[in-house]
Image (cartoon, rainbow, N blue to C red):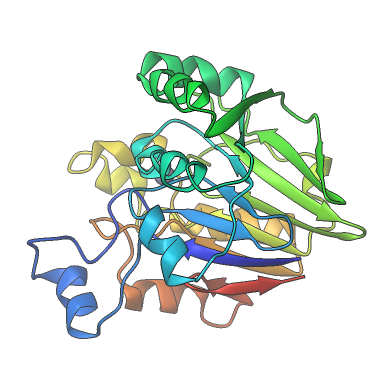
Amino acid sequence: MKFVVLGSGGAIPAPIPCCFSGESRYYKENMIYRTGPSIYLYNASVLFDTPEEIRWQLNRESIRSLKHLFYTHWHPDHTAGIRIIEHVGRISKRPIDVYIPNDVMIDFEAFGLTKHLAYFEKKKWMKLNIIKDREPIKIDGITITPLNLYRNDRTRYAYKVSQRKKSIVYAPCSTYQMKVDKLYDDLDVMLLECGFYGNREKLKKKYPWVLDHISLGESIELLNRIKAKRSILTHIEGIKPGPTTKQLQDAVKGTNIEIAYDGMKITL
Ligand SMILES: [Zn+2]
């Protein structure tokens, strides 16, 4: 299987438009870009999530086809490019298969996304497939298993992609206190949300969102617990207290943990 990380950024990745300080300044001076979170599997033309830059991301990588699209959750950093279904669906021979877990559909409905889907379906640009937690889907010899992260307060998914004895889990977002079970055993690659930098207790007053988000330290602990052959951090924020490039590099120094970047190829 061959994947490309289309976007390694988080909800607000660097460089931030109109911002010329901190990480955004560093990124602009060094011509580095992180775009919104998404990965693509070449073998079966499968896309996971559609951040706002998805049209540009697919063009950047010269992707030639989009047949299947899986969603992890409703958040705009993962869905704001939903109109890619219209762009590509118009020129596709058959409708794009869109897969959404049944409980994620509740959020899609609440935040107005099902209206888009209904319109795209009417136009025959896509076909909606409602899927269920831990019920695998087979596409061209590849198995894709939706993994509910089993958070108490919200519905978020990861996906496990397997072919023969090789497997990868993509868990880009909202992984705080996610539950890990046997499906995370013996992975070749674990691609996990990076998390914020620092101590939750010290940061919570200034940045209340850290209260329900994973920290970089917790992500590293989780990767060490899962013990995949390759561990990669993604969904990297460009706002504080997201780690700076230096903080991130220092945090993984001496470990085998890798830092994702836009255009990173993952072959397994
Ligand atoms: Zn996200």
